[in-house]
Image 1: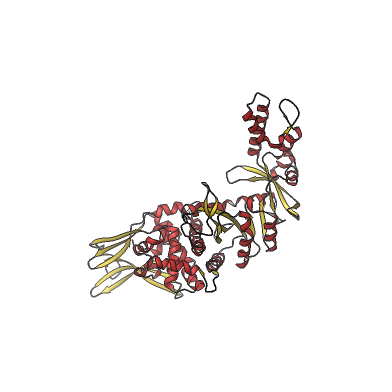
Image 2: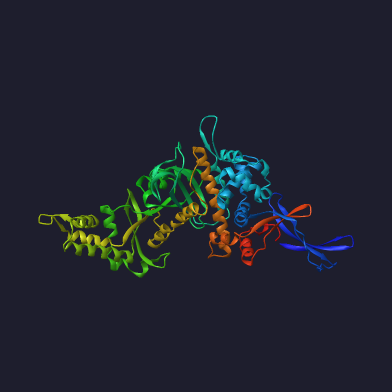
Length: 527
């Protein structure tokens, strides 16, 4: 909280502004000078406003987003936790935190990072000797996360740091014990890297590196981030991920996984670890078809089974208990989307109608491929016929799919809402690839990529923590929008006489409110 103080000097009096703040290192409240307000009388009434003479502007550094993430790092005591877990000195802990702040706020390449740090307020904030920084300093910081031991084994201490930071944010949160797990593939530029393999990303087939991330259900804070071989099938990553979650001491989680990860073995491994699984049933086996067509439309499409969707629509979800994936009892939800049901049915009926008229050979093969088992081989001029029973089976499945849960207490609505909240982890990857610039990946060494996964974890933790702080005050605002509003905030250094002073550009009311909500206002010099 800011307050004014009258300071006498000889026969004159001067009004200054101070601020009280909590010093976590000393464990007590302290005061600091904010700005000089001008000459005053004994009672503190201003007599005149100061008119500083500016000799020259030395630099102006855009500081709004960086101050936001630095404030998040302060609130979570990230630098102190790095120093404690990795057993490094204060300078190396500050250097490592700088990598996370850079990933979140600027994405400057390592070979130019020391110049960016020198121009920023980070040396002042982190008590960092910027003159000693060079690319080697950041390489050593990455080595403190992951390195080869004298016994020729890899030691990934970044996972220990992730565990400690997860414990830190969980200690201030009452989030439900739910987690979302997904994998993204990122293009790789380089050679001789064990993680870089031929795989698929949004561009198609390419050399890629995989990143697997587990995030929390409500605020989407990261729980785990690890590097994966780019060509590895997604379901192979589940068992090692479950082992890492167990190693963190996480219990009673509900894991929500994508369809490509929910094999029998993976579900069994999660249950063995004491976790529950919610997922989508893959494929249309005879068993799945029987479950999905369990109820006719009039028995499913009832008000007690309706579930609102995030896009303003609605689906119907009705659950029952039955065997699945070699498990004697699993909750299964039949979900029906009426819009998709209508589209599926209309598309099939139009193709069936098209078959009755003259069709080219090429189009005929295309239609038969789309209809699948609806058309069967038959003696006659055309060589096939439409199977009426298959049509009825298909109609019973129109617009439907199956969800499952090993937690037998969930009903259809809860299963649907839990599963489709997995969009959260997809949003995480969109943020990581966009705002946090996950790629392109250029590290060639295995240890550097494993260390980089922890840097990505740290950057996303600072992002999600700042967004959580923002939405406590402004529930409808997103952090990316707030950061755009703070882009014009700069840290200005200018000369006045023989000294160099630091001010920040004049803040708008919106910028003041945002910085206060984010806890970053105290990081800036007086405007």
